Length: 398
Image (cartoon, rainbow, N blue to C red; front, side):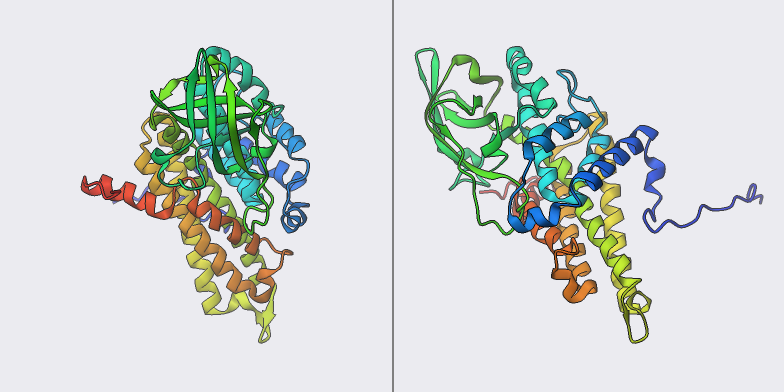
């Protein structure tokens, strides 16, 4: 039986052992290269210092630069947004989180939460007012859903809005809000007599404040705030007309979780690359530690989970581009990829030994960041129960 012409195989690429790059278009690769280079120039030289200081200086300038790259509201169309594919947005998230989770969070909250909510549920006037300037980074947005006493159960939120004539009066508190104290507009979800509604709140409105949360040991190079609304009076046109009930904010969260599926693999890749470089240069007992069987076993297992995770993210991206991606599939991706990314970081730390806890290397910074990524936008337990319900048809949430 003829085997056909003999064809030489391409060389094995340690950076892409599954050949996933063959699945990417030239446009995909160009987006990845552009974002990777920006992160290398603007973030990596400074991120250890920012992390150690617990701040993100120049966030407004960084936002404008990300806007000039087309990274804000990247997968949205119109209103100055790039209209990129879901795969391209995912690749951007991977490269940003390979630099730091805080940078990817800035972009995710801006584009997948605040801008997405306005783009999908806002009026034409709201879209024209906010989205073009958010796409350029001139205005930073935040997304207020989580409350001090209500995280995984947003239906129990206490923030409320009541009609007063033609106005709305908004009162309540939101917690753990990325970008909060630097935002020009806050998308805030509140209980009303009509159900849960979303509001586009200019942050200079009297009664609105956003004190920054300090003393974090994770996502330190990120702005995290509380939102306080003390009888904030809003005009009738502040409400997002296209969303009533929890379906609105939950659809925004699903879009943001998709970016996390990719982003977590960026953090994992940075730690794997650091471990591989260290293992091939660090000598013990007369040779590089990468030459010992136990170290090679660790590297092999890390590589397997890293590239399986990227392949999963790419698959979900294709489904999103085709309009067939279900929320349960996003839960599967978020649950798997963040969990495996944390394990890769922890294994990388063992290869680096004591150096693994130093900010001279990225490993411990990524590991502590991922502890936040593990539980925000849906805890492990919530995603397990989403999948459990989908698999069994039985609701175990209550």
